[in-house]
Length: 260
Ligand SMILES: Nc1ncnc2c1ncn2[C@@H]1O[C@H](COP(=O)(O)OP(=O)(O)O)[C@@H](O)[C@H]1O
Ligand SMILES: [Mg+2]
Image (cartoon, rainbow, N blue to C red; front, top):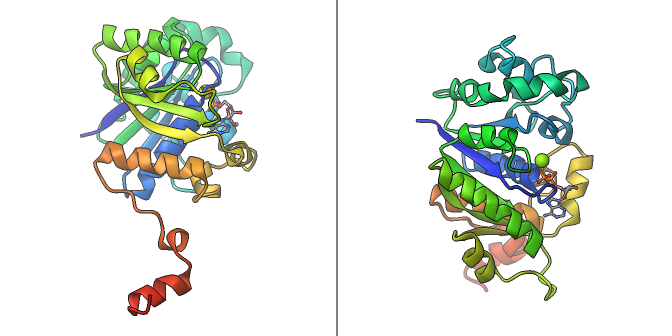
């Protein structure tokens, strides 16, 4: 059965798209079949971040009734399947009339893969709600700042209003410099568990520049490890860091020979 998970937060710029992309690729690394749909209709970024901004078909054509969603799935070179949005201003007005069809369009992916991840728009408008309605489960994303967490609470309220299962909160851009909001305070305010802490990591911006997920460009970076741990947690599996990272190959061989 296909699981539909939306990545959401009322605050913009907190790492929703980065999380949707890298959770997707991290799930791939655990052998799961994943489709990522850009449900951010007004400002779609999935294709832009992954270097596929001008695909022939896109989610806007799907909700406009011009194409089927199953014919709009692209396989990115690193293995993630994506249904991108159109970056054309042509769809700016149309999107408002068609957004109610997003949930039905995405539902047509049932049976095509194990997991469908939906990236969503910021805010609490009909557009953001449309993406939330399209999923059964929701991941709330926030940075560890009071303003972001306060906004994220509105998304928690929406999730509850539409009976969505809250899988938990992903806290991104964690600096651990004494200024971050404490994990316990975030959990208390959002009434949901924090399931991942993703460190502030320059490799994320670098990966966007390289038009690829950071889990692919820099698999051992702190953000990538954070996303892989998140994927493992959601799947109920153990995450083991690569032997190369824990030990040098020499150390590893010495240990296996019982010499260390
Ligand atoms: N862990 C991180 N470390 C550093 N920069 C990050 C991290 N996560 C996201 N960013 C940066 O934050 C900005 C917003 O990220 P994005 O995923 O587009 O957020 P949203 O989808 O919520 O608007 C981007 O410039 C991105 O490179
Ligand atoms: Mg985004």
